[in-house]
Image (tube, rainbow, N blue to C red):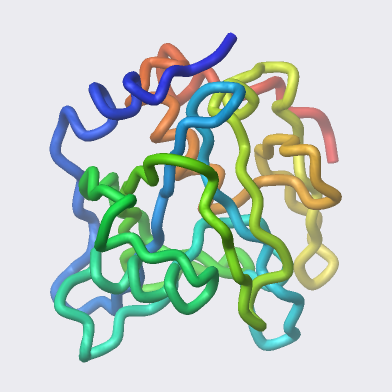
Amino acid sequence: MTVPLQTVLDRLTERPARIVASDDWKHAAVASVFRDGDRGAELLFIERAHHPKDPWSGQIGFPGGRAEDADASLEATAARETREELGLELLAPPARRLGALDQLQARARRQIIAMGITPYAFVVDGPRPELTPNYEVEEAFWVPLSHLADPGRRTWFDASRAGVPYRFQAIDVERPTLLWGLTHYMVTEILHRLALVDDVDSLTIPRASV
C-alpha cells in the first residue's frame, strides 16, 4: 500500500485543530513535514541528540521546540526550529503551509507539564531536500506513511522510572530507536485524519505484561 501525497493535501486539515492549553501555559511547536517520495507520501522525523539534561534525549520526534518572544506565531516557532535544527526553510517555496493539527499537553519522564505543543503541517515539493542537522539532532530521516500505518510495525517500548516499569505503544521505523511518546500520539492523529486507521483506538495492540 502506498499513500498518495494528494490524500494528505485533501484530508489532513479538513477539520479545525483542537486546543488544550490554558492562557497561562507555556508553548512549543513542531513541524510535521510531508513530501512525495518513491513509496508515496513521506513524513520527516529527527532523532534527538543524546543529552542528560534533555527530557526527550535520544527520542524520535518532529523538528521543533519552545516558543520565543520574537516568534510571530507558533507556526513561526515550528519553522524557526526546523530551520535551526535541519537547515530546512518551511515559510518559502518549495515548502507550503498546510495548517495546525491537534495540540497536545507536554509530558516528560511521566510528568505532566503546563505546556501546549502544537504541530504544524507543511509539504515540501520537488526533490528530497538537503538537510543539515545541527548539534541538537543525531539524525534526520523520512518514513513513508504506509509504514507508519502498517499494523505489523506496531510494538511496545519498555521504560523504567525510579525502578517502576512502564510500557508505551510504539512503531518500528527501522531505526535502533522506536517511535513512541508524544510523537506517537501526533502520528496517530495524522493517520486518523487521513483515514488510514478507522479510529485512534485501532492503533492499540493487546497489552502484554511488563
